[in-house]
Image (cartoon, rainbow, N blue to C red):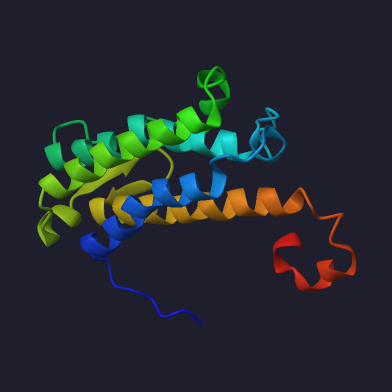
Length: 177
C-alpha cells in the first residue's frame, strides 16, 4: 500500500510544474496514428486530453481559486464543461497544444505561488455545483490528482494501440487489462 502524504502546497506544485514537461517528452514527435483525436468522448486521445487540460487551466483551477479567495457573497462554482475540448481546439497541432498548455500552466503555477497560501486560506470553503461545500485544499489536491489521472489515461490509450500486437505477453501487461 502506498503511504499517504499530508497536503503541502510545495509538493503540489512539484507535480503541477512537471506535468507539461512530462507530457511534452512523452508525446512530441509521435505520429498522429498514436495521438490524433477521433472525436470519441468515451475514449480520449492524447490530443483530446491536452485540449481538456488547457480548458481546465483557462476556466477551472485558477478561476475557482479566485472565487474561494474572494469569499464574496456568491461563492458558487460555475459548472465545468468536461467536453469543451471537442468543440474548441480542432485546428491546432498537438505540438501547438503542448506549447500552449506549458505556457498557461506556468502562468497559473506562478499565480498560485504568489498568493502565499496559508492554512487558513486552504480551509476556505466554496460551493461546488455537484459536491456541495469544498475547500481550497481539496481543489488544489484535486488539480494535482487530475493531472496524474490524465497522464495515466494517455499512457493507457497509447498502450491499447498495441494491445493485439503483444500476443501472449498481454497476460503480463497490466495496463492492457
